[in-house]
Image (cartoon, rainbow, N blue to C red):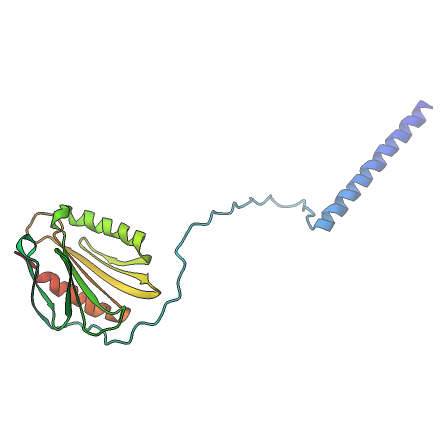
Length: 214
């Protein structure tokens, strides 16, 4: 009697195990997760966290205005007074405006918005090296402007692009040490459109070559 009971119990256990295997197979098949018995297990790739980036804006057309060509005629100019007095060549016929005691701008007359502009500033009071000033300006551009891209960098100049009010802008910056102090004393900036880039590069180089203080 005990032997019969033992055989019946073993048979019952075997039946339950078979049903369990069939049920597991059915559940795996229904879920589409039937595991394969061959091959090495593939590693699970962790999803990389998304990083914040500036959205790419819709770029509006540039204003229809003649491009700034290399070789723009320059005439002698003078700005400031006292310790801020400075002489420099400026584009002939451009409209002059004074932003402050040590910052000045020139623009072509009657041009629409998002055209060409040249800005000159004395930065004597900062008492910082050109390399420090350049690095800090890149930080400021990334903080203040949209979609900044540095196209070219030297030890004292930058050429970059940015987006302002959905307009793609090209900017050129250079810093001068005109007294041999190793500090940045004059900052020159020219901003315009892509079609102005060659003329802007030529303009900022020629203006920088003619700056003198006092």
